[in-house]
Amino acid sequence: MNHQDAYQLITAYVKGWKTNDAAQIIATLAPNCVIVESHGPTYRGLKIARRWIEGWLGAGNTVDRWDITSFHFAEADQVAAFEWGFECTADGVHYEIDGISIVGFEGGKIVTLREYRMTRPPYEWTGAE
Image (cartoon, rainbow, N blue to C red):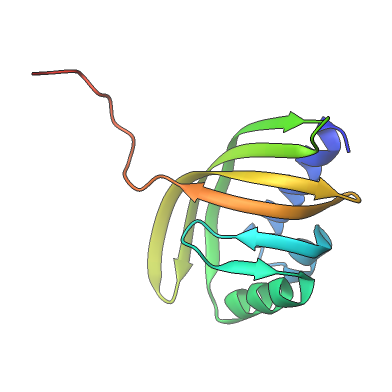
């Protein structure tokens, strides 16, 4: 996998969420994938990931915005990191989160994806006494 292929695969994953397309999301994942959401849930293997994705989307939840704000790829390690701004509505509650995901690739698919999120909005530190 090269930089362009990694970016296209990640954008396909993100686009699948934004368009409520479970098949597109699932198509980006390796059979032995492990996904760790920023608030803790971990999904091991494509069968479990599929159940989570289809259940979350099927419940009427929506990804309202997911913007990739930076992308970095280490070809030798087959690992990417991307920063993002994310908004969703889940169980009738609106969430807005900034974060980063670390993604590993295997066989042209996403094999690991681990999210980290900011717990507070960014602010300028002034050093005021």
